[in-house]
Each structure stands twice: as structure tokens, then as C-alpha cells.
Amino acid sequence: MSSNEVTLQQDNGQPLDTESEVQDTPAPPAIPFYTECSEAAQAQLFNECEEQFAQLEMLQNEIILAEPDSDENPQEQSVNRLTAVAAELKQWQTRRPELLSTNPEVLLVVGAEELQKLNSQLELVLSCSQAKRDTLRETLKSEQKWLEEKKEVLRAGTEHVVKQRLENERLSEHSVLQDTKKKIQKMKDYQNRLMETLADVLAEHFPLPTQETNADKKKKNIPQELNENLISLNEVLELLMNTTLETPHDPYISIDETFWPPYTEMLLRHGIAQRHPEDCFKIRLETFY
Image (cartoon, rainbow, N blue to C red; front, side):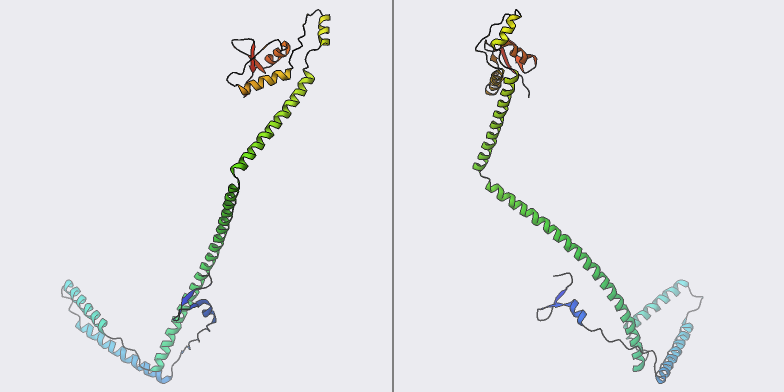
């Protein structure tokens, strides 16, 4: 049901659009307003009014004459007055109201005036109802707009959940394993490149001693014996790292004649390696983590 339509059920069960019917239905004819009566009707009404006033005066005089003396007890006066009012009320409740005049022309004018008053009141009620209807219509439009926005958000969230569910179903155990293997291979390749770069840097800046460097030291009267089985600084570092990774519970390596003492001392002084606390011929890689 839309906000602009209010459907009712007719006798045959079909919906009835009251708003469109109200718009299509022509306005009721204006009620003729009779403001004046004929002279005969006015004279008759005047005579009836005089008769009623005369009867009223007679009844008022009878009431005055029937009033008790002022010497009576005030309490008794109140009780008598209450009894009289109750009897009068009962009489008025059982009495059928009578018309002031039986003249059709007078009744027509009075009825027209009452209809005009009733018409004005109904027009006021109609305007208030239309204003309230417009307010409710605007409220309904805003609520429908808010509902559409929430439906759109819900639709987007549902689509995202379905997409994620399908994506998770596509990721099988094999694909996860293959992805992990690729990542491990990338890390190995990166490690190999780092080791190659380190080896190049060490070979260029920290070479092994040669016969020429040994001859220079002999000229300075420094006795030096060159061991042909010396290992390079790169090999020393690689040996330290592999031992730390393979046997973390015992990462120490033994120093023998293949380690050139200046390089070993350099590693110890710069905090790259450390000695065993009980055996000075064993060193290990410093913990950097």
C-alpha cells in the first residue's frame, strides 16, 4: 500500500481508492441560506413568542406566590428547594421537547442556519484532517527513504559476505601449501643474494693474507708463519650462522689453526662474536634478537 492511497473494501470485495474518489466526486451544492421570512410567518412567530412570554410570566408569578415565608428554618428551605429541583429535573427528563413554531417557513430558516454552522465546523475539521494527512505523508516519505538506504546497506553487506565465502571456498589446502612454498623459496633466494653480496664485500675488504703481505711483515722483523689452510672471514661467519641455526642449544664452534687470529679478534672486539665463558678456544655468534 502506497503512502498516497488508502484502500477500502466495497461490498463486492474490490479495493476502493478513497482519495481518488474524493478528488473525482464533485463538491456538494451550497446550502441556501434563508435570512428572512415572509411577513405572515414573522407575525405568526411574533404571536407565538408573546404567548410563550405571557405563560412564562404567569408561571413566574405562581412561583413567587408559592415561595414559603422567610420565617421558616433555612435548613427546611434548602430541603424543600432540593426536592422541587429534583421533581422538575425528572419532569424535564420525561417530557418530549416541542418545537417553538410549526410554521414550515420558520423551520426552514432555522434549519438552514444550523446547517450553515454545521458546515463551517465540518470545513474546519476537514482542513485540520488534510493538514494532518500531509504531515503524515511527509513522514511516510522520509521513513521510506530511510528504509531504502538501510536495504541498500544490507544488500551491499550481504554481497560482500557471499563474495568472501566463495573466495574462502576456492582457497583449498593445496593452494595454501603452494603459496607457502613460494614464499619460502622467495626467502631462500633473498638469503642467497644477501650471502653472495656479503661474500663479495668481505672478499674485497677482508681478504686472506698472502705471501706478499707476509714478506712485508718479515722486513719489519715480525716473524709470521702463513698457514695455507686458512679459511676466509666469509666462511667463518657462515659457519657461525649455520651452527646457530642448526644447533641453537650449542651454538659454539672451536677455534683451530685454520682461523686467522686477526679476524677472530676483530669479530670479538666489534661484538659480532663472543667467547665461551669456560673455554676460550670456542666462540659463538652474538645474539642480535
